[in-house]
Length: 393
Image 1 (cartoon, rainbow, N blue to C red):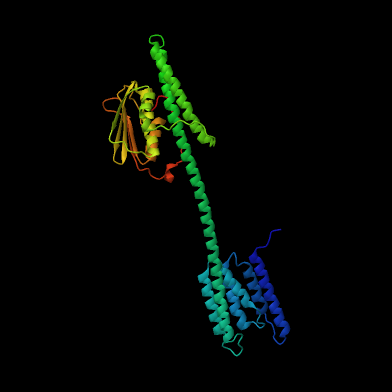
Image 2: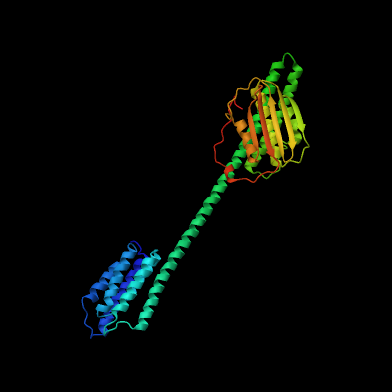
């Protein structure tokens, strides 16, 4: 059995008051002779009262007309005014304040004009009191309507805040996933590429020049050891372990000579300007961009030579990595390497341009500001991380 709504219980209570008041008036005033309006008008008002939630304005008008006719022409003078006040309150409570005010004023005017005969149903004091009740009923209805609207707005704000909090958590998770994906790509892609190059060199010179093969195998050993250390560091962050594990030092421009040496290329290294103390994010990004660029030279250029130029300017640092190899056929943005480098630069408020050189070869130029911007919501776009593709930079 469905529970009755509070408005239904109010309607039942008011109807009981109306019927009881009418019967008591007839009982204690036997000199009054009831007429048909004493039954018809309260019945119509009761039906309209029950339907006031679905049709608030229509119900109010019906009850107002019944009330306006009841007091001048009915005999028993039952509590019809209570029904009208409840209808006024319901109309105001549902947002129909203007119709409620207009209907209340019209009824008061009708009651004032109708009390001109010898028999006065309400005197001046009662008329003023009724006017106050009418105003109070409309006012209370408006207050409850505003209170409900405020509660709905507060609930909506709470839901929006919760939704924003969840979105922020998802954004941060996406940013962290992309950051770890870039780290893994840079560490594994660069070092494994170097191992592949050195292994090829060892196989090529194993019979003809054993001393070169020994150097290549030694480089493979050191590179693989470095790869394992860096991979262990990254996985430790993923597992969020607390134990003190040996971690590899982060790549940095202060270790630029070592980074260039690990590339296995003949690198012409140029450093211009006065080196300034770099923020950790900028220092790591610069080293990763150089590392990835040298990996691309080793894998795709067809040459073992490259030029790395690092220029320290006022407020920013410029990095250029160039080669003059024949393997310059390239579709811009087709691989994840350049995309990852560009994301690193963009996240720091910088720029990165990469493409074939007019005179042949390939060029990567990054401009990184020293002032690191704050993270913005658009940095975590939730895109899927593409896998590195063979044969693409």
